[in-house]
Image (cartoon, rainbow, N blue to C red):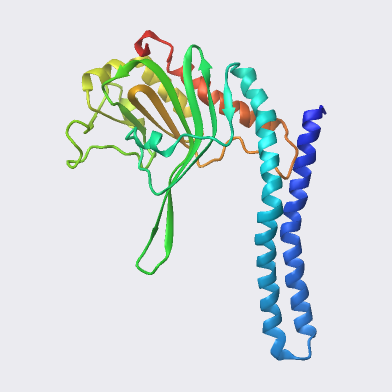
Length: 306
């Protein structure tokens, strides 16, 4: 085990120990308070003793998490990502820049007009670089909407939890083409009558029946949409979707190709209860491959995108 992995393992074990303590100590407090209550001769103090046991446990968890556990967890996460993951990313994409704490600004995603945005937004694990002469950015994205009913009960609906990728093109796309895989919910389709006519998309079908069964296509300029949807691109997209770990949406906006994958997963997170192993290595490689496979599968280095 090299020095870097020894440091990671030491930090991981410390976080795991603190995690166990964070729950074991409150449990011991509750059990102790219940034993003392049962053994007490003054039964009037029994419920009060149990109450203080539970209350003390909650206070302990809150302060221990805020003052001790969270600090060590963040230190471990940052070291794991800036060393272990970054090295693997740079090995596959030499010019890559990885910023674990940074992500796409909310406004950047909202301006695409591709997603319903809700009222909760978070983005992290930002990577940018160049692959096969195609510039790209990617980040984990979480979009949710929290609402309350008439009884005051809150409900949280997750619109997107997965990765968002952006591929640059020298060509400006006028089609505003949006391709939505069946099952990808909460896409912003902009097809309603209350949408400005200059921004309104309309649905259309391709000549490929298999593609039409897998995707719903919307655009503003149908002529350019068919120019972009070549047989090779449609075949590549169907193959990529079959290998993807979530539902996919693609949008051609201005001079960028946006790809959203709703997998309900947090990527690039370090393990806590086991040492980094081959499965963790494979997760990182799969995440890198999620970017490179779209460049290769959709032939984004072709002249059509230049």
